[in-house]
Length: 138
Image 1 (cartoon, helix red, strand yellow):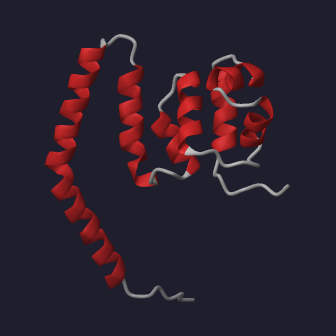
Image 2: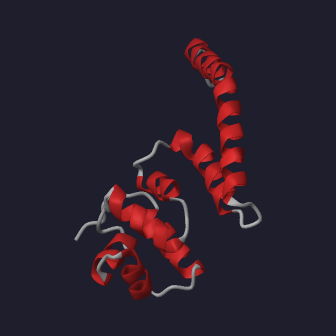
């Protein structure tokens, strides 16, 4: 069976499972998937649905969005935002109310800065188009 193009999802899942000190069978049971199916995901032979990724994330106690990025479901550009959110949500020193307030503040800053970020991206694209072709000189 040929390997599907699922990025580093399988390797990432395997590493997360090992860090959680779970066997393949334990994670499969906790996520409600079969042991062979999980093994195929880890080896890159199967591409799981968003629902399965969510079940795996819950069992591993990690952000589902992080798995979505690894699987190519969520855009790579959103990775920083996803990772920031995951860190906030995983912080054991914050209670749930504090996490939600911190995420609201984070969202408000992102919205406030969005026009500036879009303008910078547009300017960078224009600059890239205006570059003269590179020539090799001896």
